[in-house]
Length: 164
Image (cartoon, rainbow, N blue to C red):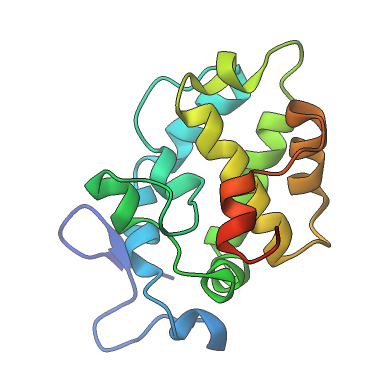
């Protein structure tokens, strides 16, 4: 059981390190966990309602490095396919990414432009392209790409991955 860290967050008791997967240990994924703290539930509720209203796109649906130019986009960008796999393999982040993707997939009668607005609709496409490449066995990513983008993957993400 985790306790409050005194800063509004929750962490393990003093002296106890949280358990991570080996792959996630090699990457600095804690920035995503910290960013999602206190925001994730709002993001998921907005997605289920079919309309993103607040600012969380960078750390809920990350993209490959090199696509975004803002400081937030650069800070939350994933370096490569290995870091994307680590994100998916993280016990909290991977589950949340799939849950949010499934929430988007469940929205009926709206485009990603209507759900996210511009340019976040493009960020969603690039994120789905990245994570589908990271783990093609997770159906939610391909389903989102097929449903909202007629199966067309983001070309800039594919180029960054060397899959053009």
